[in-house]
Length: 89
Figure 1 (cartoon, helix red, strand yellow):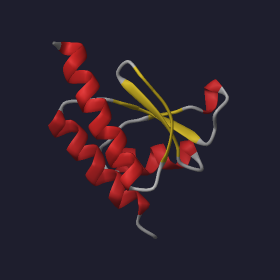
Figure 2 (cartoon, helix red, strand yellow):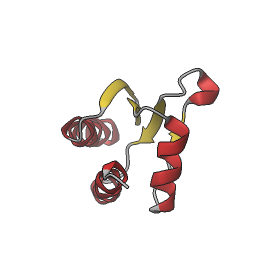
Figure 3 (cartoon, one colour):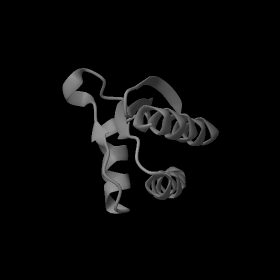
């Protein structure tokens, strides 16, 4: 049951990222890797909005972040923070 829910929620999260114009690099288990340009800066912007993601610079992908699949409510919070982070400053 958990794998089924995770797969569904991962697909929903991937759709939200792609709708926002993000390039999905990988989707596996309970996370997604996404190209965002500057992973560290983007992670900081999301963190300032209360959402924690992992920049993938230490893993050789400085342009990417790792997003963990959460519950539908948590994923909605992430999607809203993503939209705010993408707004011009």
